[in-house]
Image (cartoon, rainbow, N blue to C red):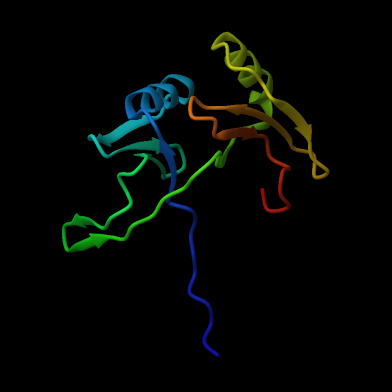
Length: 140
């Protein structure tokens, strides 16, 4: 059997939102993410570490989307999805203060067996967001 080809990381992840402008503003204001592109269908925001957060308006990904050289297959997510952003050890208190100053309720604070700590909160669409220090998983 041939060796499994390598994967170098997660490049994109998607959330599905009701109000694209509201969600884009939330993620840019709270996280400072750079807008790579935005139209009536979606926004692509740059996340540190060569990653991209895609925000899609509900219903805009139900059909194939034409793209240069082919098409993007349909996809969707329903309900409250989850996304975690890695933060450095020394930034936990700053994130707690940042969320408080933005009037964002911290839903849960959790200490993990490997030594990491997570803060959980919600975005305007009710998605569960998390910021976590190293020590959440054995590999990070």
